[in-house]
Every structure is written in C-alpha cells, then in structure tokens.
Amino acid sequence: MTSYIQPFTNMVRPDGVIENAQTVQQRRLSDMRGFYADAVAEEAAAASDPMIYEVYYAYVPEAVPGELGICTTTIYPGKIGAEYYMTKGHFHGKIDRAELYFGLSGSGMLVMETPDGQTNAQPMGKGTSAYVPPYWAHRTVNVGSEPFVFLACFPADAGYDYGTIAERGFGILVVERDGGPQVIANPRR
Ligand code: M6P
Ligand code: ZN
Image (cartoon, rainbow, N blue to C red):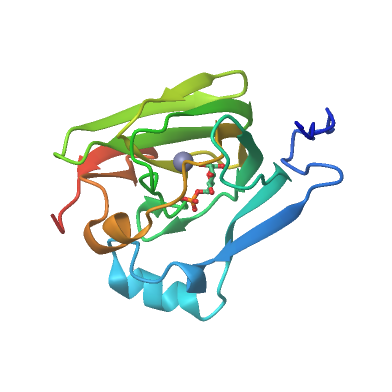
C-alpha cells in the first residue's frame, strides 16, 4: 500500500531563514580551504574564520526518485582578496539532474560549467528565476554589500559531487574590478 507523505508549507524569510527548517548547514572559510584563488588572502582571512554562507533545508528527503529537496542559501557579503564570498559549488552525483533557483534578496552571480569546460555566468537578484540544466556544475557568488539569498529546489536523488570542483575549481571566477563584479578566467586552470 502507498504510504503518503503529508503536504506541508514553510515560511521563508527574505533573509533566508526558514521557519521549522529540518536542518541548517553553516559553511565557514575553514570548511572550504583552498577554494579561493588568492591563497595569501585566504590565509590572512582564516584567522577570523568568517561565516561565508548558511543553508536552511525546508525538506531533506531520502534519495527517492520523484521527490524534491527544498532549501535556501544565504551568502554573506565579503571577499577573499578580490574574489567575492561564494558557495563551494558542485556537480550532482547523478549528473543529469537539473535544479531551480529563485532569488529572494541581495544580488549575486550563478556560475556554471559543463564537464567538458563550457562556462556560463548569470546575474541573479530578488525575483530572478534561474534554471541549472542537467550536467552543469553550479556555484553562487554574492557580488553585493547585503546578504544574497535564494531558494533552491532539486530532485531528491540528485546528490552532491564536490570532489571535481574542489580539485579543479571553475573555469571562471567572479572578482571585484573597478568597484564592481567582473567575470574572469580562472588563472589556476
Ligand atoms: C543551493 C543548492 C543546495 C546547495 C547550496 C550550497 O541552495 O544547490 O543544494 O547545498 O546551494 O551550495 P554547495 O552545496 O555547493 O555548498
Ligand atoms: Zn545542486
């Protein structure tokens, strides 16, 4: 017999806090050492170990095909050297799974890359709906002076492959140049 999941709603605040969240994940700089291009600036910032981003999960289902995961991400404003605070970024473990993002507040960039090295960067802000197609690794970056907050919805069986990005990074970086964000080639590639 089918056992039905009960429908539910959550209040999602503009600052990214989800009331009655199932879990909250915090990522400090110490959780993502080696991700920023400027190793000297990263080492200097490591002393205070700043909070880079937080993820509130409204729903963390088992990896059942057909189910959806729902979360917000709040990336705080800041830079390591010239590079803006950002998420680690990942391919999906099941690499052909897509994802939807919806901007709630602040301003950011969505950086994506295919396994064969095609890159793409999309600006995001309050009200932006963004589609991450199958096969594209994805990272978000806060390019503003306020927290950048967005909602994400993804297939429950997507999974996370962090290793590829941890090793190679993305082909493009988002850095501050002349007082604003600029997308540049990753010098470490
Ligand atoms: C988005 C979604 C989440 C992801 C989060 C942080 O909310 O893609 O699945 O966990 O961003 O990104 P990362 O997992 O790369 O640190
Ligand atoms: Zn994802």
